[in-house]
Image (cartoon, rainbow, N blue to C red; front, side):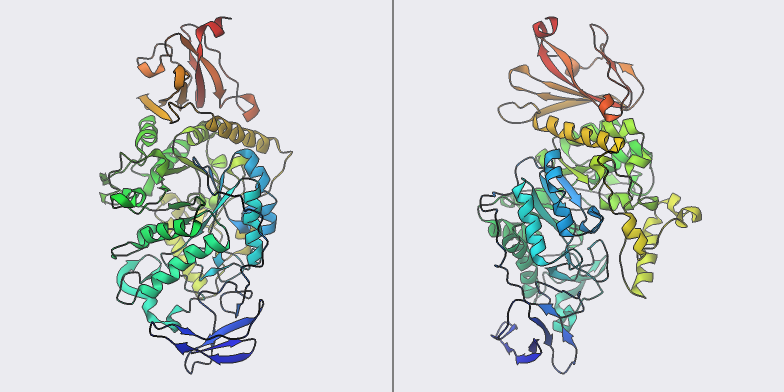
Amino acid sequence: MSVRIDGRDHPLARDVHGYHAALVDGHAGSRYGFLLGRDPKVYPDPASRSQPDGPHGLSEVIDPDAFAWTDGSWRGATSDPVIYELHLGTFTPEGTLDAAGGQLAALADLGISVLQVMPVADMPGAFGWGYDGVGLYAPSRLYGRPDDLRRFVDRAHAVGLAVILDVVYNHVGPDGNYLRAFAADYFTTRYDNEWGDALNFDGPTSGPVRDWILGNVAYWIREFHVDGLRLDATQQIFDASDEHLIAAITRTAREAAGARTVLVTAENEPQHARLVTPTARGGYGLDAIYNEDFHHSTRMALVGTHEAYFSDYRGDASEWLACARWGVLFQGQHYAWQKQPRGTPGLRLPRSTCIHFLENHDQVANTDRGRRLVDLARPADLRAMTALLLLLPATPMLFQGQEFGSRRPFVYFADHDSPLREAVRAGRQEFLGQFHRLRDPDVQAFQAPPHDRDAWQHCQLQRDPRDRAQIEWRSLHHDLLTLRRRRPRVDGAHVLDGAAPDATLLLLRYFGDHDEDWLLLLNSGPDRDVASLSEPLIAPPDGRAWQALWSSEAPRYGGQGTMSWSPGHWPLPGHACVVLRATPSEDLDA
């Protein structure tokens, strides 16, 4: 084995662990690759810090210490995070890190505290989601240079935003994947993986594979100052080791961060409680996992979708109450769509271990033409559900553009060459075929193939500060995130209980010190009066009365106006969410 750097070849010596190394002359900007045996091809470095010409080209030497950081006082992600998911290639029309950096102050002013950036590892082609990345250590040249990513993180910290990266450790994309040329032991056939061969995390020769992944975890946190990771599709990370790779990732991330606080979250389709159970109790120690149940239930209510993986949900107040009190809905009971039990018990887990969302990249793309909820749902219902999302105890997440009611779609796009592009298109159509409505030939005629450049560019956000609808949606999110920070506490902790008197009415009560309670009422049905409701949670504290604090029907959000309460008459508008606060009765009388 040799390294070719700046046109000169240098032999590498093999050590007892199977690694090859030599000390050679080079500098920042040097191009290099590896020669393996008598194979004439020059292979890129599987742990390259930069691939200026993409995953098939030569690797580039990067000086990781050249960037002048200004975030020395930054302490990391704060408690009670509000997450914002973005894709760098569509977050702005320019699709670059520098252009995205220009939007950070606005997100911080809105009340966002954590940016979740979709995968940045280098990938083939001119555009893509990033989940078929192959250069795990190389920030994609599509968005800028490695120091552009450092500058993005530094700017985010300057305005008070933490940054976590979406990383893919369950598979490696097929295009540009040269790992087998170095060692067949990167992969295993012991497990079935949805996206090809599973990575070898527990075989006899798995140590270097684990090192490759865990080194990547530490790399992002140390060299790019990121504040954590979001792990993609962890149900496809197979490991029978004494320390599961996910637990090792969490441990490595916290060790690499030192005194800084990091946030490690995951997507896990079965929503297993073990992922967010502390390691001292046999868990993996993650901070939070996606609560797909909340999304599926609220989408059922907003759009009416009741097929495929939405078919086990009713979309009613009892489900939202259960999400508020217990987190995920399926904790080991039978799940009809999969014809098997789903989830594991987690009733005692903190509510913050669930991430709630109304939209994310997957769920928006899993519709016809990638349409957003603002185009599919009744505006009043969407405002009310947005209030529920942002005022529940769970960790909320917004998807890019959601905060200003963007009508730009988000579809699946990936720039592959033939024959892979045809296989990807067929696979995507097969996946969407679980929805009967998406089998309609008239619907399929509007579905752009993933490799269509226009499909990618049509997803790029367009902001207009003068657009009335965008102003109304932005005001809604800003005011709700302000309310979220003001929620009552008892001895410093959020204490909540609730009730669902019927399918359309949800009551949630935040208890506060000195009886300074809040009452959240969500009505997904028509107008009603709740003055004589036989539910004790609606009664105000002794010596106090309910006073309107906030309404999703306020005209500044495009609503029809609020209703005044009077003795014996407590009108609750239909398709709305109202927040009340307990105020001393004498204050109201005055």
